[in-house]
Length: 344
Image (tube, rainbow, N blue to C red; front, side, top):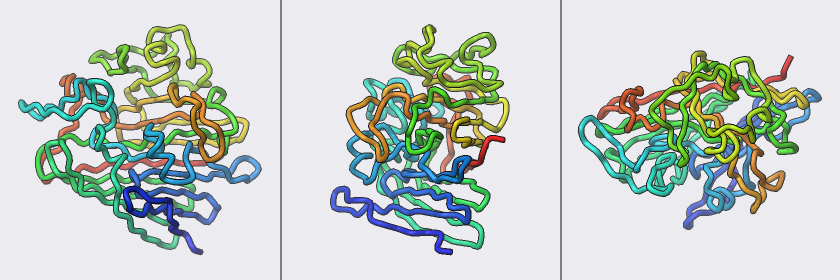
């Protein structure tokens, strides 16, 4: 079986962008490209066996460049927001070029999401892997050799392995920023899709979307997803925290378990994310907008949800949270498993 194919995905600054598609024995296919080590398409079967795309994406690199909302991108060196675009390593403070007002979002203007990565592939009997590498050097306090590996198995699992080694002390806190919509080919918004999060606490945000240094219980609030519920129950809720996030979620949840579940009952598709991280930031696509088109549908708010597993956000400021410091020549490594299947 020919598990891996590569095609031209357009050009950026005269450099060819390559899209790699991995297919398993069940027909599930995962595509990614060298711009931002970005997941561009994930084809998954529904109850009737129909294969459809379950992430927001574009037909070429141009869409990702023109609509810089991190669609499908590898995020780093630091996922989430850092207040005043400052990084603190021990007693030393580094000022990074801000990209969201005065603050830093998802690594900044020169984050992993805008880099052109080198690509290679590996194939075994029951897996296909796409491997992206990058020597990252910007205004962060280190050069980082990064390696991100996407592996597709015949169990309909997408495994993402992040590995990074800096030459000086720095921050590393990576994630993937795919916007999931399990309806298939973006046929419906995410309102009716169900989310289950093993979290008894969440971190509130301020009006700028910056995570605060406090922790609040989810019990008795719209933020309680322990037993699962439809996203329509929280989108547009009359709650100050929801208003701060433009009518939806953009909040960190502190995980008590390792599995996050996302389900679309109409198609039957189910996604289980197995993570080693302590936090998942849930962003319900509150500010996607409607001025452009995805591959399958016109853009609109709440057309996809990001489930950004990561370490504690804004931890450079809130030092009582676990830090994301990686020391010189130490290896940062984390693995996330995306298990696709059908709701029983």
